[in-house]
Length: 272
Image 1 (cartoon, rainbow, N blue to C red):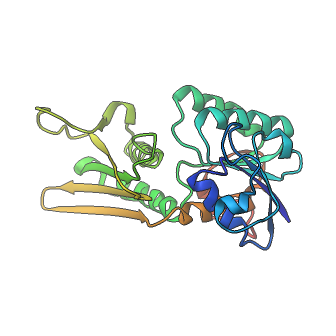
Image 2: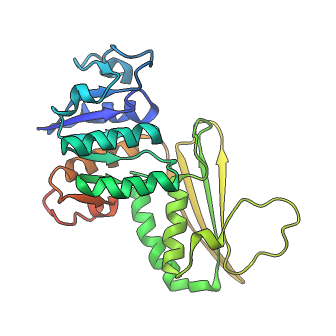
Image 3: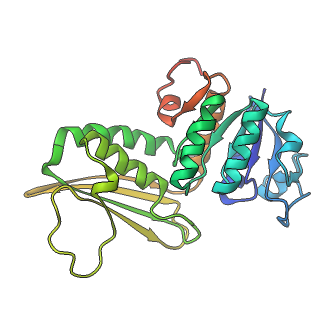
């Protein structure tokens, strides 16, 4: 039985993962963590998630439950995630890191700490999105620089970071395939008299509204034709399923900072 703790358990993703863990036969939720002043502290995590009482109270500190955990699934805020990561490293536990919105300095800290444990990190835990990213690498290499590339992402109106971590990952995947640097060719929205589009630009555009779980469209356009690659998440369930699968995989993985593509294609452990 894999013993799981969720940080950010009262948030949109935390509640969804709680419901998902309750459906697993090989996993048990033993810890539910939220920031200390949250109004749900002390309440049952199952009740908060809408599944009914599961006997696990929401707590304000990871320390209370960490040493009883095999893996921590984190969907919180960047600062909290870094604090949790340090604690998990100190306790030598495993982690699935799904938080987005990290600064370059934050990412440098993660790259320093995460390889000391077993950690899967991805800006999007959806298995479908990660298949799309693999496909985009092949498409970009095949089409080369002859196509204009635009990335359009849409999310719910509560999402804090923009553009999404997934859109940035898409941009990085494409520019790497084309031997470019996203920092040099990325254009984040357009306004005013910006002139003709430069050939090597990659446009990245963010839309926010309603309860959109997550839409990503990548457009490859040239004279005479266009190719669109689209992924639409209809609910957070798709992200939760990926995070749960990653948690199952990572507890037996070698130490290091891993990507969801390793989980998806079962690298290292084909029987996971």
